[in-house]
Length: 640
Ligand code: 0RA
Image 1: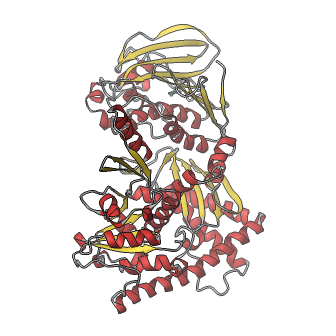
Image 2: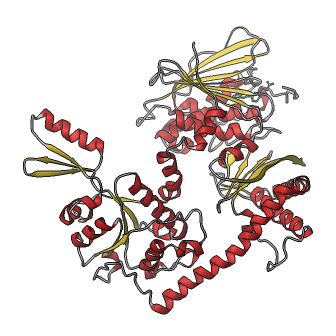
Image 3: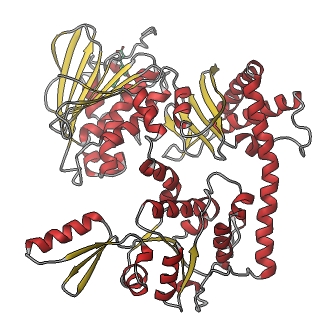
């Protein structure tokens, strides 16, 4: 790879200290010792190789899961330094791997990925591994050293000649530290590695599973994206209907490298992922605000020049121009300043002007060269501007109605008699017959029933005005009586449990998903307050003599039946087709009575994912995203 070797030598390594502290308080260095912490060991090692790639010295990284539970990370970079450090009198690699504060100014003049919560990086992995071996291919020779629990277990040895170049680390997580699990998960690793592959164009990642657990040949995944973040945007937008061609710009200003890709889709969501040196910044920062300003400015100036703003009140707002946008903003900064230890937000002020300039110029060129895409994008923003006004009117109407009429209740609602929200529950019940059984089986004092009979529209896809026109949703909104969207007033809530009760089949899951999507988008405070639950109706009834046992899923039923078989008891199994098939007392005893039922509290992540998860699980077709992964990340088996 063409680039000067920033000459590095051991003299740049400072102060030394042992790694016992890391073993005493592993969570301080890797976050936790559960499955997340375990994978963090790997992240630390991979990040160093990625840094070498970002610096331009490496274009291939291979991660191998070995049969003995260890992992190997191999790169074709410059190879870690092996020369003797004047102070420690040890090879530099030994100091880097075993001495807590021997940082080594690896990073001088280079972009750095996260590489360790407190800059401890590879040392933490070494300290928390039963053993670790490092092999370096450098200047014609191969070197090797072994460590155990972070301590040197062999001298660095020159083991022979080689024409290879790079660094290879193999480590086995220490079971004394990772008591819960020491098993690496392919899916998790793919998820950790994929953004690096997207964000570092032309870097080849190979992931090999040699454990041979589910197949008799190694599994091999390759991730390689010729067009970097542009591929990322196409990947994320694959489930959507795209508008216009993707926009891509890569430029520099001063020492800041700016890479942006974006594409619009027909949806309403805005999703912008911001990265600094491949580190995700969930709360954005100066790069994100530079991007947003550039977009709003460029769209408005093009729209104005084309006379497309006529009939609007003022200009297009940021919200208008970001509706249905998916974008990736990736910057490389030598000295990134983050807010907080977790790097959630980038603070360097100079990054804002760099991104603003690069993106604004890029967009102006893009609009000028591709007027068809430009008009489609601006047409969408203009529509969004008008629709936002209509939606606001509809939302205001709900609030007014609630205030004026004291929130008249929907006719279908069988309300409870208690006026104490803390003990009151509202069941949203799918289906006419189930609604009937629920009304008869309920505790009238504390349990209210709202049967839902028609189709609930997908709140993900429409604005408030359309949502409120759907009669089922309108009933839910009226029954809750707390407003909608930004105007929610939780103090008006009459039920502190909102329980979604749907069949345990595909249709039921779909309806539950649609309700969750509505709540997530328009009633999020309810979920955040922990007021939303999903009932778990049983799928099976097993009768043993006169006793009835209800089981919620196939697995529980099988286990129960196996026990009966073992004891030689006879039994009958009944599978419920739906809630409606249960009589009121069955429904009460299995799903509604507080002392007998099983409720699952909905976490905010569940609701956020509901829609996507449903489509992934239930889609009859191969989900488009998966298709894309398969065609872009070759999955093959190797004969070794
Ligand atoms: C700084 C200087 C040099 C190599 C590296 C960092 C390096 C570290 C890691 C960790 C994993 N893979 C790596 N690849 C490279 C050497 C500079 C020189 O001696 O020319």
